[in-house]
Image (cartoon, rainbow, N blue to C red; front, side, top):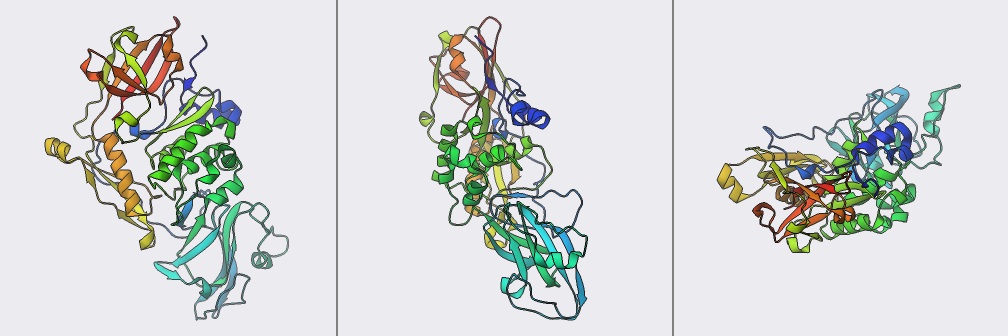
Length: 448
């Protein structure tokens, strides 16, 4: 029997960095999966913070964000010039009215995100929204065929490169006095599908955003794994489509829609964990495919599982549990409220009242900037509270050849056991290792 193919994503990120998608398939490390909800963190001494939205600026090496859904971002200055004192200059191609004043005016080009984008909804100068009809602008949606902006080309001068910035969504403001700018843009599922054919191949093109412009987080994660330009560049054939469709339907049914922004210089592993956190997801590479699971909280009988009996054990199971008196029993989600111009707010904390009564309150505040409504913040808090309120036990089981059909992410149901800890208990497999004698060591974690 060959080496067990239930493997981890951690090595894939390393392999991809070295050799691209082909190298990544051989860069996996055996024995685990990705998903921060497997082990509950300690409650934090103080809340984390999303931080302010920030304002438009120019910084060398600044990350160009990848945007999903509808959100507000500051952007990065590409160019400024045509500085004129007094009234605003000529009207540009963007349309809109004209304002005059005695302050300096200038032209401004601002990169917003990786394209492709559907709409520009709003512009803020400082804390005030500016009617789009009051500014002269040209908006470029980030297609590969977009042309250079005529206004920027006019003032760059002879011998200067007038770039079209393919695949970059950007805006050019003609002769404006506005400063401290932020922009609300909308990148739809249709935009993703047009820019990434892998989503159609997987059948995820049918799982569109809701009426508020938020997006299915499973589709966001699939796009990041497969996009050839800003993602990890895996092929659609590297993802097990049936698993992804199932989890997309799960998020759709529970109305878990979000608008994440990947705007920090982190490795692929960190971005994947961030996207998984929106639906309490787990990702595993098994039998040559990426598969996805969600830690659900319906009746346990509804979870698919493999029956495991005491006669299947080749050795007595070994148990362990991380000891922490401060595992969170109260969860609150910090989010950006679209109804309040995307200002940061904290959703109502959800608590396990029984556990709070036993140990006192241990609160964890989790920052998820892709959440845009209090309703979704409450749903995510409920899911995370269910999986994190107590430290789960780990178990190691030595099993025979039947374990060859198991994979990380599967659930075992231990039935008829004289060991109380696993009697009628669901165990989530997090790793499988094949021994030289053809037996298997299966590592699992209590599934609640």
